[in-house]
Image (cartoon, rainbow over all chains, first blue to last red):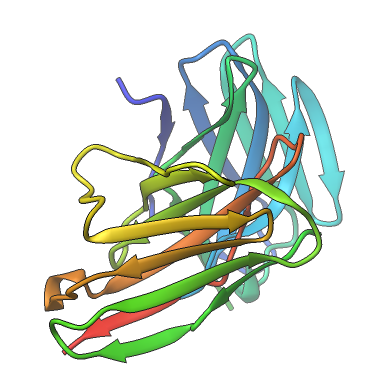
Length: 112
Length: 115
């Protein structure tokens, strides 16, 4: 079983839709959770960083962490064509601060 | 947010030559830097982890004599692809962790084409 599971998509939505991206994980030691956006032929860009459980909001983006279910989500409100990219989740834990585990990435396409 | 700069963004080299890619943390000190390789439409593949002042730790299957990594300072790590072959053509990305930090920041990536 992989440490982090993420549906590769592609996920196609109309402009203005609410997008839900998700990752599940197996290691209960994970407590630092990140979402990255990667445009084609570019390096990943950090979107959201959360520690432990709870919600964090930044503009149109909301990150949720449910440690009891080992499940994290990224919601994008009022999605725009410019949001079309691959979204990667990543996480690390107290057992090894310098080890980061990535999902395989979900490709999102927002249609105008 | 923290900035990691990677240079060059694109490089073309002849088969058999060596090419160096630099990764710099511009506004923080990075005790740990990571190097990844990414194939088209695929996820990141961790190649090695480097800590400042010590030898890099390579992932299984990555040739350490072919992919030389140097992390000489807290703001600079370099990846040298030695005796490059066309199959080494790929997108190489570095990332860095701030000292005491729990997240990582990525460079813009470097496209290597070996002809």
